[in-house]
Length: 176
Image 1 (cartoon, rainbow, N blue to C red):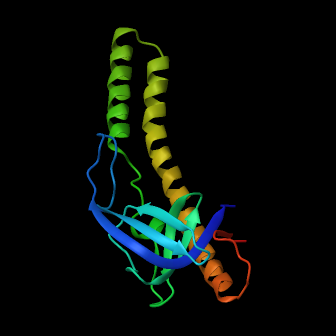
Image 2: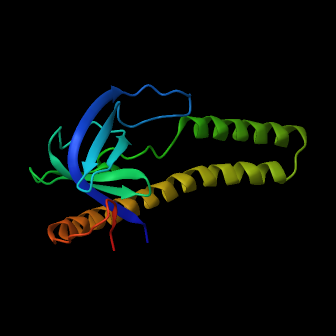
């Protein structure tokens, strides 16, 4: 089970930036990133960075932010009723450039080793590469789907918890 926490408060500031990958292996599905500052009901401020083009709130709106670990995964605008699941709207890529290059290099190396030395070991490594790469993509896809569903359920639970009044809530509350 994933550990979700949520914070509700007012949006203090939203800034939009254009993504420029710093390294050749970094790839973002969204061309933009947003820095979101939320002033919680109890006073502390929280900063979240999310790589997305969607932002259902602007400065002054009351929001509920759902966190998985320290990462913002969903946002619900309490004033307009709009919600966004960032794992569903702009999911991370399943296949990365550096993995493609590594797979090609391993494949070429295995073919060269088989041509020079022969034997079953290079063929086994080549077969593992051909099976392992799609397997890794399939496992990432499955993990993404499960995280998207868990985030949807946790967002609904957090919205129900936010409606119920409780006088001494901490700034970050856990979804049970």
